Length: 368
Image 1 (cartoon, one colour):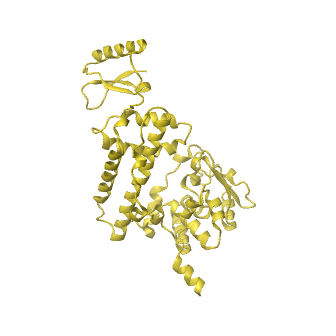
Image 2 (cartoon, helix red, strand yellow):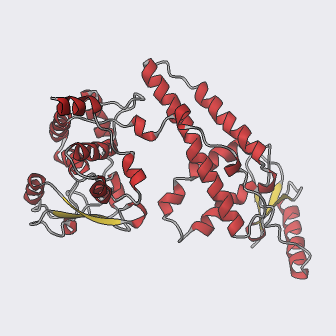
């Protein structure tokens, strides 16, 4: 359905027809004149005089078209996380390119150089030289993920018939790990003594924050899995089994059942008297768990007080406990196949990123 709209900071009304990829100025500053253009356009549609221009989709309609085609194929949150990458590219391309077909591999390479220049000119004055280097590498790593996101958008448009032409993004090389490092390099791995100190500090702040830390370490659970864990997910409380994930609170809807330490299961059983279905923050209504409680501010205050920072100088997050969980199990002799099952990874390569063995301590133990 075609309609007219007045864009911000534009004097004229625009004619929009999302179904046919049409976005053009009517040249009219008054609404009554723009409505006449709209009626004339609709008459041309009835006569078949307007050709579908989907193969030359405007950049302003790309995100709407992409989300429409990805709906039902991918999880909504997975699609939404890609929005920032697209908005940054769209802001950069505004005034340079108006349609998908105008973006070439050379333009994609220019965009990569633009992002690298932003990383080079960032202000790191409040960081140590080591933290400054890691923060710079982290910004460079963002290019690899944005390149994959933009390549995916172009591929979806091509498959859906909205655009026919070469995909420019795969033609631009990824940044080599020797230049930007890996996300594994920026994880904060705690020792068992530091984990106990974190538990004590979180418990001192609130029992719920302490339970967040323990669920993250003893189960290797993700943030969303922690907030979505319910009492009914303890499928075998006596045998020590816990079900994590699922469509509502798992990554890509995946679910896994894992075993938990006996001492931690005893502590969980002692909390079962609370009157709600949720293990964390039981004093709130059991609806919309993602918005029940945002513990980020309290968490940052605790870890900053303890001095638990990542190599780039940012405070460690609950996900770093997942890295510590995998590392400590590997050092205790758990084989990688079991680690992959406990973490819920599809490939062994992903599990490798979570292993950060302390080589000096292990070699000393072996030689001793």
